[in-house]
Length: 113
Image 1 (cartoon, rainbow, N blue to C red):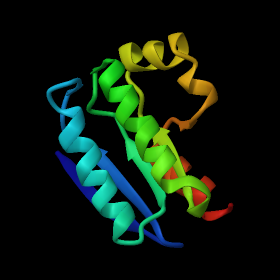
Image 2: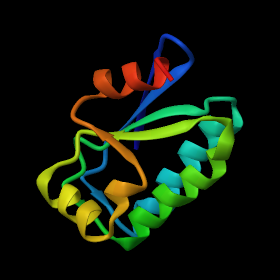
Image 3: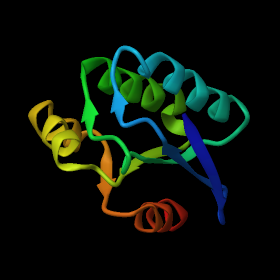
Image 4: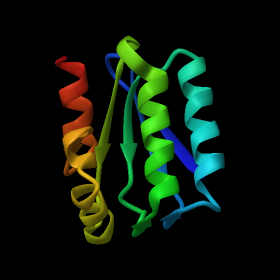
């Protein structure tokens, strides 16, 4: 469900391999990301470029991840497909998360503070 790439400056890119982040996939997704956080990865890029649909459960998982990181780090989003981007805008999650076009842009932003 998640493919991890370690980047410089202690940034981890977590690519979601699922195409739908819904009530079916969101709990496992959240658990996998939380395991990374508990292992000390608190500067995360969540690459959603494979996700073409996200529902409220998926958004709730993202908010839970952000809360778990808290002040210890940062979480960014990249690669939003049109339907997912629309859901982020409708729910104003685009105001909560920093969103980038690519994982490279997001990782650079995290590395530079």
